[in-house]
Length: 480
Image 1 (cartoon, rainbow, N blue to C red):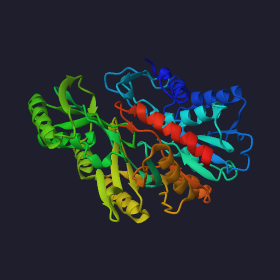
Image 2 (cartoon, rainbow, N blue to C red):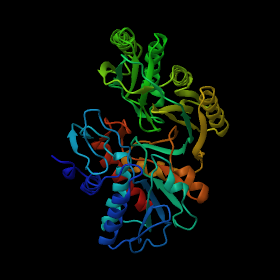
Image 3 (tube, rainbow, N blue to C red):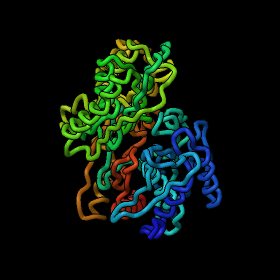
Image 4 (cartoon, rainbow, N blue to C red):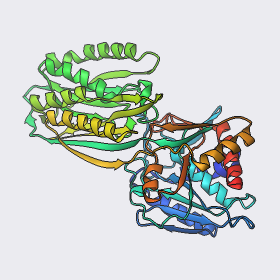
């Protein structure tokens, strides 16, 4: 069975179509063109705004023209993560999906259900002429995963809806009315590489097999950060008198880094110790993360000796900075102890050929704590000799406990499913907070089917939850 045979067929067929169009963050030309052509082919009103967002509108079912317009929202881009064995090219290749029991997965890559399922929901609703609803519009936004660019550049007057349904949550039956704000802390350093001594050898130490994961939703699960693990090995290698030629860990600021490597340069005696050191650290990490990480693997292999390496002082500064940098939960929410308030993800560390850079994503539902942790990260980088810049700050979405749409959702969900839903807040960056700065009177809620391990090659979408979620959306639109 393929996913196009799953029920409800409308949403699964739309999602399958999306998997065939490359759409990694920063490269959305193909999906933008596809969605505009899809809208044109169906006779829908559609246009692309100044930021590259796609807006599509359909009229109300006859007799329901007086209902408030509902804006359905999701982001076009997906996080391009793959296993180390995969040769997938996210710029050209379709995502290969398969069914595994109750789950849809992708072979060796992220699935793109975050937020392909949100886009597919609107597509299926718009295409189905049998449904009853008031006037609808959808906005498919640009680069939510990398920068929130689409909503950061959203202009007043672009949207007409008074109710915002953000279709970008990962647990069916959970309805979000508040989320964390965030900010990128980016650090750079330049240095002058030194020639490698004659007779020196090089060993590449690699870490793999980590779960990684969403740096908001899964930051509290105690998962290992590949950059932090590499730092201990690097420090031990430096203590023996060796130095580093390069460091490469992680590739997305909003994904917990699941892999990385360093190239160590030294004499035969220094580098020969690395195999034993890697075995020791692998055993230590597997013990430390027992029950959390299942396959931590550390390898050391001899590689061609580079012509240059970092000065010992630079290698030490980078290593110490990574060791000192906070990575993980900083504080839980005092009034809701099971929700993370503030966190920091050391997502990217790269250094080679005279340039070092790092990217940290700080999140918090409290502005003062966001500033505090960002300042702490900045101070840590500056002590290590880095130059620091802040980018991409987006606001927290403060919950409205009296939200009319939330009250409607509670009622309709109980009617449809015979059980209560959960109204909550999350420690993830959602576009609602930014949209509401432009449209403050919009009544907003975020929800979706059940997804697990987004931002990793283990991303998966729960099949039964999709039908339950979609049937609820249909009923909700009918009753709004």
